[in-house]
Structures are given as structure tokens and as C-alpha cells.
Length: 378
Image (cartoon, rainbow, N blue to C red; front, side, top):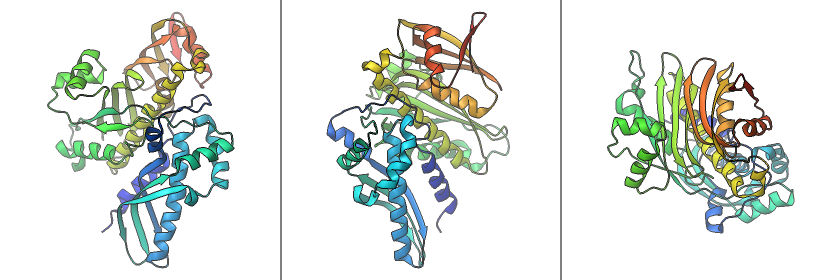
């Protein structure tokens, strides 16, 4: 039997991928061709269709899958400032002519239905030419790979779904990450194992402690090391995720909160992983501006530690604030402290301090005010 619930969950997640990628300035970055071409593959993409017979269903699934995968590729390559152009590109492009190859990861079919997971590789020069001919800026330079440890803290309460208990929850969280297209992303990830980390080391990693990071990364022979810890609270309907460590953009720590559906825990975990991956990609895109002229127009002055309080009225607003901060060029050593129902304390380092960050956030839809010596972000 085909697990329809899992298939639908995967389809929903693919529709969300890249919606959380932050905007960067309209510039195309160059990189060695071999590395750049990887980002033109959209892997592990689920397709499904029903037709009059098996052949028709498969043909429709492939056609719809190519088109949807091509849209995901455009969202991966284009800065968010150019997302409004995607429909125009889709209207004039024939994805079938731009596909360099299709690989079947898995497939199942019946007399009238076709379900599969496919890898779509698009022709790099063809896609670049299409975007350039339309005057659309894009980014195709991947970051150096980061080693990421998916850690899981099982809820200790009655009525917890069996899928979240003990090692099952850890395996589920890891499988969610493994199901994403990690290798071809703009911020590629490789999954790590805990390798016997102590509880104290895990705690230190969640705050991006530089000493422990260096120790763990050295033992793993990794230049960059991250932890993504999931802590579901089914009773409260909340999923807490800590994303911390050293990625290609620098050291940071970030606490995220999501609504948690105990009837469909996989979907909640998948959404959290997609958001986390989008944050890492957004951080890499923002860091590319550091060596270019665009950065000098955004930040300036010596790196300055800054404490601020974020105020928000909804969980969605808090997610947006975290996303903007994590992907603002120049922000480093970002750490989220105490989080209440309507506010959170934040520590970070920014060139030029509060006044400079105030100017940067104004252009990104947030406000930062100095009220009686306290920086308040809304």
C-alpha cells in the first residue's frame, strides 16, 4: 500500500521550499562551473498523477513534476526581490527543453496512478541564458558544505505519540533532514552523528560555544559544524528548534518555534527543517555581499555587541523577525535568549551598532527604536 499521507506531506513541503530564502541585492555571483552546476539539480522531488491508464498517469506526472521542479529551481536561484518575475519566466519557458536528465529515485504505479520520487537536472547554461536574456539576476555559487547534527529531545509527558518516543523520534527527525535536497542546495549540508557527545557538549553546542564547536568540528574533521535540535511539546502544540553552530556565514545561535500537529508529527518536523535550511541559505546569500560593494552601502563601522528586545503579537511575526535578523548582511554571533509569549531577548554583533542596524532593518520591513537606552525591535 502506498502511504498517501506521507506522499501528501512531501508534496506540501516541496511547495514551501525556498519561500524562506532572504532577499539579497540584484547581482549574479560567479563560481567554478563544476560547483555551480550542482545547484541546477532539484533532487528528491515527489510527483503524483492519476490518468485513464498507467502510461497517461506517468506522462502527466513527469510533465507536472518538471514544471514544479523548475519553479523550485527558480526560487533557489533568484533573490526574493526577483520572485515577482518567476511567473513571467514560467510563461515563456518550456521546462522539458531545459531538462538535462531525469533520474528515478523510487516509483510505484497502478493501473491508473503513478507516484515517484525523481531527480530533475536542468541545463545550467540554458537556464542562465534564459534568466540573463530577461535581465533577471540570480545566484548560483554554493557555499562550502556544513556538517549538521540533527539532535532530538523526546517529550517527557503522557500521551506522546509513539513516533516521538525514544530513538524513534530521533530517527524520524534525521529522516526528515535526509529527505531534503541537501547536496544541491546553495548552502549544502552533510548529516553528522553524535559520535558520543556528552550532555554538556550538546548544551554548549546549542549556544554556539566557540571552544566546544572547535573541539567537535575538529574531531569530525569538519570546517563548519551545526546542530539542529528538535524539542516537540505535543501538549502545548509547539515544536521548539534550536539551530546553532558555525556555518559558511559565521557563528550563530537561533531558537525557532513552530505549531506542532501531534496527529501529523512528520509534517511539523518537515516544515521546521525546510525553514532551517532556508535560513542557512539566506545567511550564505547575505554573506556573499560582504566582499562586494553592496555591503558597504548596508553596514559600516567596527563590529559592536548589541542587546535588543523583539516585540511581536503573533508566532508568524516572530518567525519573520528571526528570519530577517538571521539573513541581514553584517549580523553575526546571533543568539536568542528568553522568549515569552510576546517578546524575546536577542544578542548579536553588528558593524556600527544600533544606529547602523536600525537603518538596515528599516529597509527590510522591521523597525528598531532606542527607548530610554533599550533597543526595541518590532
